[in-house]
Amino acid sequence: MARDTSPQCKQCRREGQKLFLKGSRCFTDKCAVDRRAYPPGEHGRGRMRQSEYRTQLREKQKARRYYQVLESQFRDYYDRASRQPGVTGENLLRMLECRFDNVLVRLGFAASRRQSRQFIRHGHWLINGRRVDIPSYQVKPDDVITIKPDSPAEPLVREATDLTSGVPAWLQADYDSLSAKVLRHPERSEISAPITEQLIVELYSK
Picture 1 (cartoon, rainbow, N blue to C red):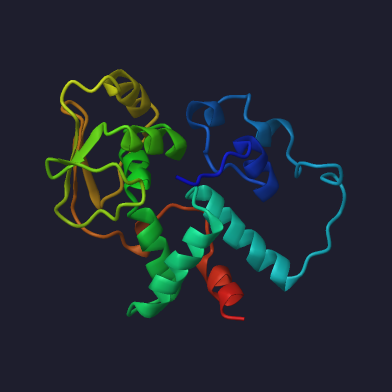
Picture 2 (picture 1 turned 90 degrees about the vertical axis):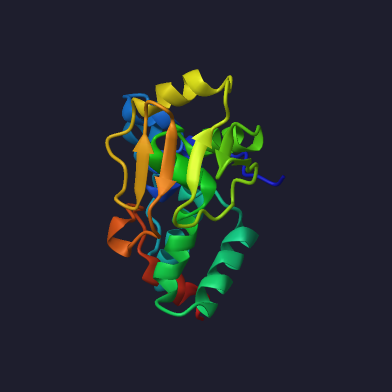
């Protein structure tokens, strides 16, 4: 399975804000964005010429890194979103938000998307009683998510729930049984990703 193995703290520094890619570390004073608030590389401290294209490109890269998807995957999501009825940018964010690995993070069952993906690939989670080991699986309304009985990952999952401040209104979580239910698809106002989707639409529309 193809995946991005580049340093995650550098990804946050490149985008100039926290993308919360490393779980609990992002909430400590060890966070690289707090310690070095400039882009990585030899010319990170220098001034960069701003342009419309650069702004749009950076927004697309930020979205791709936030949800931890590769370039070809992200383009495929955009193509599918553009063919759906409604607003293309909102359709794009809704599909990214409904990825199984992202849903586990929103529920608080994983500290980061990388950890969530590992849990899923190792078969620790079930959807409607069946094992799903595909991180990009699109959850649907009324799907019931449960941890595999006697899963060795349970202590790590319970540890991750301590970082959770709240669960989005489109999801319902039970931390005692480590189970959850997808109530509906998210509305745009319920998606907390720090992304301006219109810039991405403008980039791909050229």
